[in-house]
Image (cartoon, rainbow, N blue to C red; front, side):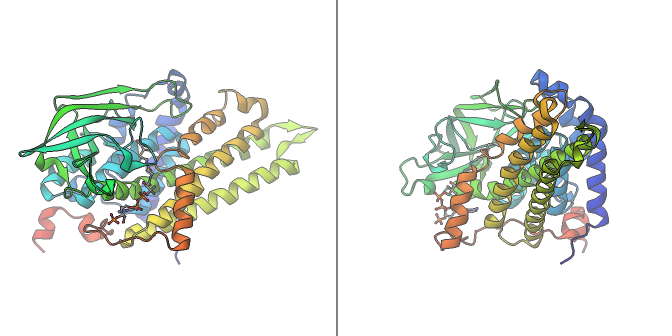
Length: 410
Ligand code: CAA
């Protein structure tokens, strides 16, 4: 197996690393303290092509492969979790779902402006009373002629007040048995009458990001905005999570790296008992663990990137990568704070922000407990991946990097 990165992957990684070093890391602490999203971030990510990095060129993207997407997410979260969250919802949970399930018309109308970064996108699944238990949701989308009437409230929605497009999962048949068969997915735009949004304040972490709620009151959604077939909403939501969880796992890998790199630097500067703390065995042990966690998380993510490139179903591997990387990013952040001692307890250094940011990812996009259940169920054979009507597209460089005319012309 070849573990080296190709030129394109290295270039994308370098571009994002430089962007973060120059334009994010110097000021992110201030935005985190203000609990506001830097308004320059989304336009700048759009300008650099990051918002559509692994979307085919013909749909407005940059045409890079899924491994590049993982590397980009790692670099973004190395700087701050909020930037990777943007990628999880805009790119992973929304744009990739339209790429997988959308009609050609939906790809041109919604995906292309998203990939170009002209429109921002969010994912509306979770509700105040329905998180892990997706099928217990109460939002409804009842068919009336050539429209669906959408009602409900979605909660913990990243980019709620920034997004132009929402991928919303709701029940077209609230009485269906089993409940997940009565769910459908819709693309809803923020300018549709009856859509309102708001921010959630007072979060433990991801404070320089945008998290909120979205309400739908008698929103008339045209039938052509339904993604996939009626009744495919649950499967679409799960396939979205297969994509979103990869970005979360790759980002958490970047958070582990942030903890490791910052701790290594600090441990060589800070002295106790007449020598840099890097020479104390118990500090060495923390650094060694961080390296072990980083490499393991990185390799688990690489495997997912490889499977996605090949178009092989990866629900199981993605769940494992997400569970491992996020759990260990919390551990790494705790250890980093300990290496920094009292300074780690203050916002003079970024490690306290790493710790606060790490906690969200063991909750969203499947709690660690959900992933443990999934892993055990795969192991026992209680869970298996059934073929889908519409599988996630494999990475085909010729198709992904070409303009539509070039394909048509042979
Ligand atoms: N892709 C496609 N289809 C899938 C699938 C996948 N990955 N996983 C399951 N399915 C299909 C199954 O094949 C099955 O199909 P049939 O009806 O044909 O049999 C159907 O979906 C039901 O599957 P399960 O029986 O496995 O479903 P379940 O009820 O056991 O639920 C679960 C599984 C793992 C608990 C799931 O509900 C889950 O992952 N919950 C966590 C939800 C989550 O991650 N929420 C976070 C939302 S995003 C967010 O956090 C907000 C944000 O902005 C960051």
